[in-house]
Image 1 (cartoon, rainbow, N blue to C red):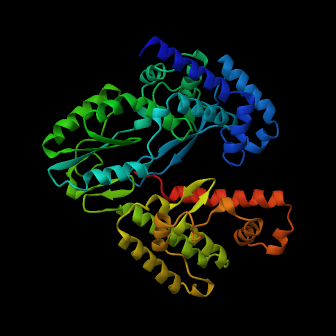
Image 2: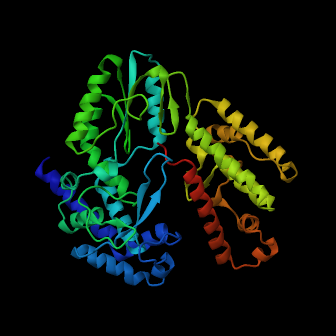
Image 3: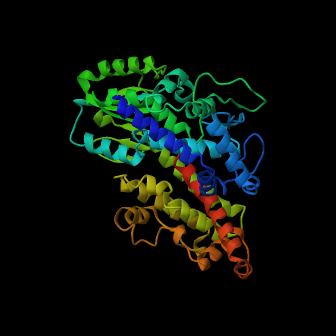
Length: 450
């Protein structure tokens, strides 16, 4: 890289750092991304307490970050179960002030490394489906799952990659301070020397920066796709084993190990027509469909909602929640829900079977008198062919005050006239609180993808 280009990148990094860590910008980020959350870190401080003295905290974070004296508090440990035969995944939960600093850092890195953005899963699935459609078993999938991806990232290698575009020492120190902060359920103070904490706003972009050089190498040789730690390659069957050994060796050079090459693991070589499960879909030249585990998962989710009639007499609330599971929604400018994610499926019969199952269960529970659930097939067609004009899928960003009052009354089992007498600020606050909670559940419905 030429010196002029490198200087340009350095200035960009420094200017972006100064912009994102200005008190004014930190205040904006807090109000947009953190204020309405309920997450608290190890110090137990709620976002509302920081909001009450936001000017002070924004100035303090800004001053310390720029001076290179900002220190992160030990992250709170949260364990997420992955399955009955797998160890739980450790998620790191930062304090409110640290989340603000981390979000600002994420914004800096996304600006300085725009090419580190992870392609949306939809784009990857569509690309793979288009690529494999005309091919047969003279081509194969190589599917590789990296072992303990986040915990295996080497700090020296990460720093080397960051330095290709960042020269400002306080910024580099702040990033490495974040990845070195321990995660613990106790009073652990020993710093991490290996790995990136999972669950932080900065985690994905750092892992992507770490893999950029490897991705460049792989893309120059194969039809290569990666989503975090899941790698998929399409290549001639005759070259598959040799290509796997090459990829395995290249991963080892940066401290990463993949699972052994076996048919019953996530690392495998299979003919195209056999297909693979990738990013929630089953991909094969014949058809793209929702993978079985994802399909079973949504059945479990809707069953959980419907069987709630045994314990909850408020049937309108149950129907609203069930419909939200089926259609998803648009909120905060984003498409949320299972059907949005799987709208690329070509196997409409799967959706028809879901609709039939829900209708029969609804009748068996004696719930028809309270209305009929919406349908996955209808949501599928609305998403793919009529989304701009559709009213079948809730657009919570466009709800009127009357619609907000109706929803609040239904979800909280409160008399509508009582809610209608609330001040408009309270109505809006409660509405967004309820919707954020439901949307969080929708997001959980489509994760994890692997």
